[in-house]
Structure formats: C-alpha cells, structure tokens
View 1 (cartoon, rainbow, N blue to C red):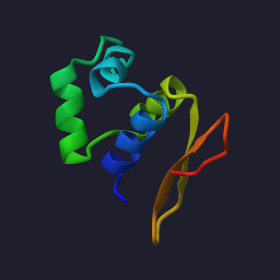
View 2: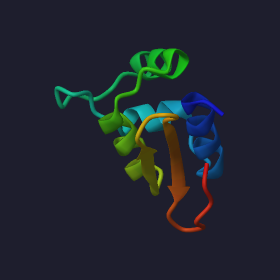
View 3: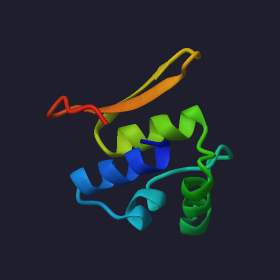
Length: 84
C-alpha cells in the first residue's frame, strides 16, 4: 500500500474528506495548504516527513518511518492501535 492509499484509508477511518484534511494543514511557510496542492501531493506521493507528521496529528494517529532498505512507513491510529 503506498502513502496515498494509507492516507485515504486514514480519512475513511476518521470520516474526513481530503478537503477537510487539507484545510487543517499548513505549508512549510506556515500558510494554509490549498486543496489543489494537497491533491497534487497525494497524486504524486510527494509529502514531506513533516507533512506526514501533520497528517498524523490531524487524524489522531502516529506516523512511523523505519530507515531504508527497505524503507517502511506506516500510521498507527492512537485510539485503536490499528496499523495502516
């Protein structure tokens, strides 16, 4: 499962839309992230680690990343412990 699929799964678990999530995020310059920018990052898989951390906070989850080879990224829902 790629990062975009994991984020979409988190959104389903939290009954939140991509638009709602984008509205709660900030860019690296501290400005609100636009829905268009969020969708492009989702499509291209270009979220930074700090953005993935933000996503986790907004969705009440924890973001994990193991060092490469092979690199593994996942989220854990804080209330249920489910790993995505």
